[in-house]
Length: 338
Image (cartoon, rainbow, N blue to C red; front, side, top):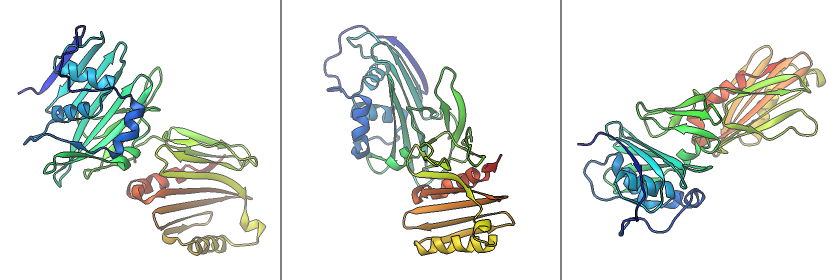
């Protein structure tokens, strides 16, 4: 039985008639349809990575998928690309690279879940376009069902290099550039998702008006300061989380309040707009409040430094709440007056 197969080929003949492919799709076209497309699988008692590769390649007829399929199955084609395919059946992983007119690469792997499911991951790149797709395969059901929410929790594959695991279970993330810089990994949670606790806080925002800094993960993008320069909004690549870091003048001084009174006022304000408070903390010079309503969570932290109050308000979708709450604590902990 084939376990680890590496095929290298320069292909330069006529396309064999009866090809499984029809038409041509590019990455943006696939991106527009994959979330709604359930892929029917052929009968097979023990599906392996080759089985999933063949199904994905036949479902989406992109240039890279076509060439990778033809290289692996030793089908000659009319164009003259150079390609390789690594098929590691033992570890449930495959990778392909194509150079020439159809330049790009492909990665695929799958994870086994204790309840009998499998999660299949795909990262496809053609020229400057990249796409990540995730599917659920219930072994008793002969289909791959799209998991768009899981795909959305993975950093943007166009901005970052996403390395699926050949060994182990975690996804590694690199910043693209002349030399790829590792910025963290997404830890497989064992049940069909990833914890983002190990993402490096590799970016830092400095606010000149109030003299504070806050660090945040690479998969958040700043939206620019407002005219008054009090802070900045940052939104995650998935759009499921955001935070606003800002400074202001100390309300305790301005309104002759104690910190306890100011904290209780903020708690009551959250309750009035419908939040259920899940956790609170108050010390001599800072506090935080965590609450939820409907499908969203909010995390507010404030620090009093002389006549300045530093604030960060973090909001995130309940879909990622279990994984993201620790990340919210970590972001808030980096808020510092300089």
